[in-house]
Length: 144
Image (cartoon, rainbow, N blue to C red; front, side):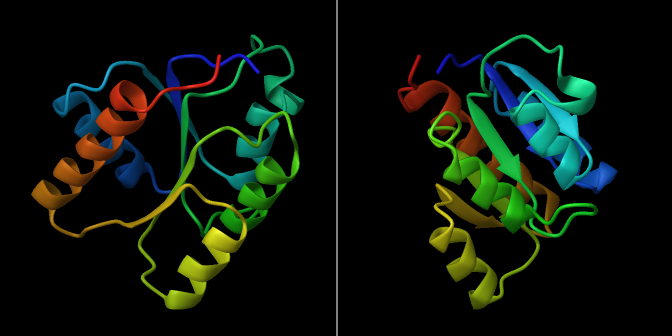
């Protein structure tokens, strides 16, 4: 599996997506952020199908995945990515506004690499996303 130095952000909320991009930038996290707005687009991107069939080969260095999205739910996206041996190594971090125990448990049952509840406070959100981005993009070793 080849990895690229970009983050795939799957979130249907445009404001949250922009805040995430800004937080990564403020935190000094290098790499492009590719944003998709629903679960089907996330799957198409990862598996190079549909509108993304012609994208260059390789996988994101990190995927930030919201749980509650249109077309295909985030848990279903996670399950399909982790079920395929070619995409299983992609680190998938759930970033959700849900702090329900059931969502947390189901995410880890589907092999999420981490689960983060989006803070409401802008400064907390920025700090948390920046730390997350630095860890996965700069500290953690990636398969090539």
